[in-house]
Length: 266
Image (cartoon, rainbow, N blue to C red; front, side, top):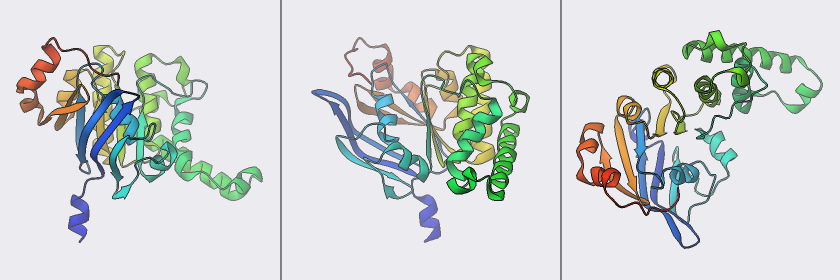
């Protein structure tokens, strides 16, 4: 029984669809994300990639289909309930708390799981201080694993854009997710920053065992990070498999290089 549970997908989607008025953004999407996997989702602009993430994370409701997280059906749940069950998500634009230090940003992520009860906080009871000590210690441990301790006391808003993205990702890791959805994490980064991002994601996977699902246009990052890739075009899944095989798929080549560019907005 235990072996069967271990082999079950940590995140699953069956027949997932989303329409915006008369526009089909996604149709009959399927996903079986295994624990510890590194999956990439690619496709031309407007293919439906961000729609997938918005559905899986509860930002929008599906028009049809079912979503399961850790075996529980979560389709239509609000984002905060899905997050509590073990799914974290980053967005295309960096969103760290600019006025806080890097360490405080990570601590903010920890508070989603480990905050002291309201009464203990308001009355400054010993439990509040003990919880804060634990959260600060754990935040330092996360920054150490991600090799970001040199940034701990820096104000997040003062950092270069690439490092702000890393702070946002570290904060998501601090929520202790089983699955981390990364929406265009390399957007706006130069090659050096992208290399640092790749190294950070590999540390997250190796150091915390978090399952990674990445939407990304940077093919070098996807091909180096992911062991399996899905390809969307015009709201439909057209290819899936190991990176080398996907790269050679004629349907993928046509989607990227062909003249068809009438996809629904993602």
